[in-house]
Image 1 (cartoon, helix red, strand yellow):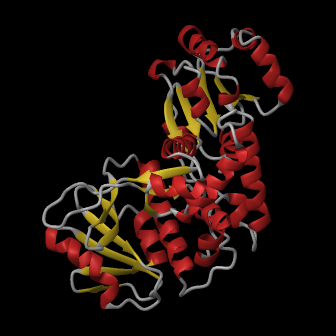
Image 2: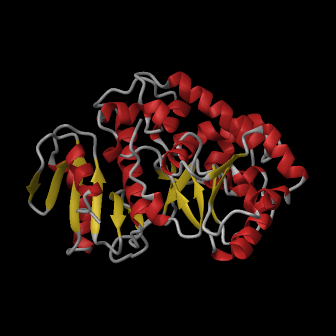
Image 3: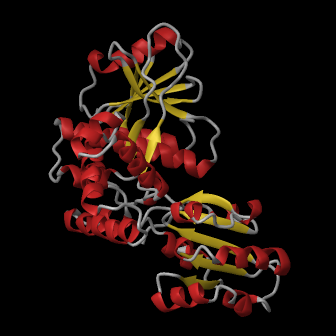
Length: 379
């Protein structure tokens, strides 16, 4: 059992939408933190069907509860009609609600009641470094940080099952796409673009569908919380910079599985890509959990200089390299960025075990960086 750092008790105020990709641990967290809550699990087919047939039965079940009673409805996207009743119970009876799910897409498409701002959206991410007492960087880079996947030596079978459930229950069951085979092929091609700048035309060609369809597919990944974008840093001073966003799957283990990267070895390009993804994943989760107002972006110029993460308006630049021996060549992107943003804090995260300062750059061993990040010393 992992102790999650997401302070859901502190975040809760009258209502909350708790979203997160499948198997990130939403149900486990809710049952652990709110043992006395009234709980409805819409994965239960009988309960789901009963609420679909008569949403007002929720009112009948809860109308006599005292104001302030907490009610949890898991997988709310499966019966979005319940949200009208939830709104009425909150407004008229003073009940509190946590509404959890793995997708906001169906709620958006159905025009479901968003509760008039009474429920704040929050996200539960995969495991993060402070939650894992037996942390091993190579396992995190290979398996990813979904709890069930991190805990085993070889997560290949579990990842295979994860993809099948996602395709069957999130895509086919919800009728998101006409051809499941085409979408499955898209997921594999999208994995090749993981951590890279998006080019819809190239991906469409590889998938045999239109660029418009590819954009729709990416939006499905975002709405089902299986993928996210890092936008490009926009402030152009000397060098021309690329404006296209970068795409990442929400967990590096999923990207590895879809690309067939089953046995990563240090020193290889595949390991380097996965290592970068993992560190980005931790930075995104830290920002999400800590309400940091600073933006996260990346910087890439047309003359091939780049920095993996830029925090805020060039407050911090982070380059991520899986090398075990940092050399000057690894700092080229940071040095180019400093020429345009001389007051920026420059950090290079790597597997080089000696954390130190080298000129204007901080060279930080990856676990030291994670300790600094979650200690609030990066943002």
